[in-house]
Image 1 (cartoon, one colour):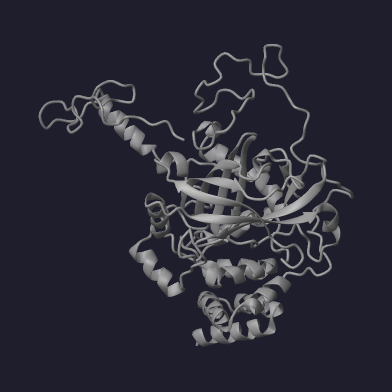
Image 2: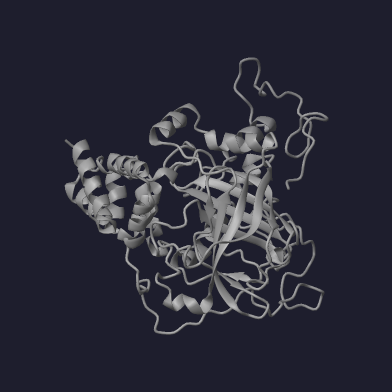
Length: 489
């Protein structure tokens, strides 16, 4: 929680605490004369104003957040030794930041875009960050393609706008995106609010118990408010009338005591079963079928406290998939492996090397102890303590206990494709998803997709894009081709 300041008592002051005599007129060289450089109140205010926005996130720039509580409702100690999951009824403070992915900080909430789901658990063993989306899959499976993908979603270097040509050129040349694109252009592509959508860890993670047994796990957060979405027409209208619709809805629901909540579930796979599962369990473009690994309810997440300062708590909040606690670790998921570096690196650039010291980011149920000192924003919290280890002055020491179990590796290094399992291809799960949809849902999916594809200027890109959907399901492809042709007459 941020330290609270009394901003009403006493005189107005400068940042150094000196009282301000006049906050309405600048100091000038005579009546009507030019201003003076000695007016430090003016210079301090202007200099601070020029710098009071940190760089926005390259992705997930537009967001909203709230504090809450995670409560354990089922015994999972046979799967993980994580202390915050060690006892039914145990509560852990959390902070959850929602966001859109591609839009800038000044965009609108009600747009067709995945929603970021960044959840921080303030556990007694340190902060655990679970950074996912409101979809269980993603567009690509290897982190090396991520900058290229995001470049297609952002502004074109020549036109300064998002271009349908760029988006569909990349997607059509990356058939592994077919599953996520089907999600995105279906009904759940535009949630009605942050409260009315599910969340997912998306990646596969490792759990390890006290005995050292390993399990693979996927996280699901099922909204207790029910799924509610916007049609494209509803979203277009709302984005124009109230670009802050999702942020406002979240804040006001908490203010009135209508605390949003999610039922937390996991899918658990014994580590030994991964090698022979029908799909590669570490491929972010795939889900694990519920019939193979049913979801198990393990807890309840409730959001019950709004941040007091958006700039300090939402914009400066940082999350990293590399923030693990004992009993939880990474998997060989190539997207996750890339994010273990990229997120921390982004925060060190954007917020600063001491971003972890900020109230929203620092551990709340324990404290950080290490030799890191100095740098921009360092507050001197360590006093005169030694900044090296080992030392004989009572400093912190290593535990010798790894957070997670080692991964078994074999083979030569190389730029390998993600291994395919028995039923793996880039289209099978997209086809399953299409066939799960009702006729009305399919109609809206085709309308949403065709409306965007029809904006593409080149026939070869259009044909390649439609061909990917046809490989997922023949009817899917035929209906889409007909709809695009009609729009391009």
